[in-house]
Image: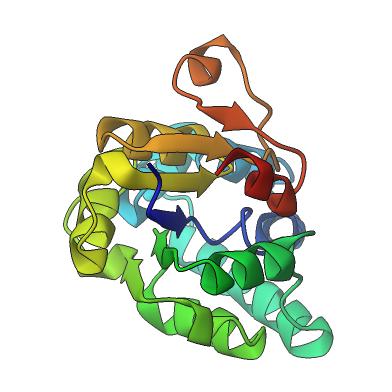
Length: 213
């Protein structure tokens, strides 16, 4: 029986991964590495150190990774300041249902806490959550299970009674290793045979999860 639902944030609750890709593409063009955003898209959700190594493996040890991140972040924040954080379809409907029916709710995101709180506050979703676990609160990030185990512990619900909602291979792997039922809402990554083996369900929009609880 499912007693708690734990959400990934970027690409799952909010349509921010697409915005990030546009920001990184612009940053890459300025730094004369036009395909940098494609590399970034393949390793979204990994640790900062892993991403830095991937870029330097691709472009050489002199690649200005810090400049790339600063530029990309500037364009990303500029978009959000002008347009707000884009919310994925069905999020409010699902959160309202979960709250009304007594489910515990958490966020488990690789994003840093400061950014996470900004996104939740600006979309008026912060009051829905009983626990928030962020990437800078742990040593190991997804695909290790630590972040989901920490979220379940914070909710005081066994992992086997938690449903994890994700959009990426790393996230699904993390929740699956934690022993949770995994639901994918595809965003930048579409499910493949490797993913399907770990999935409890795959839905098009967040509100479709109501029918499988």
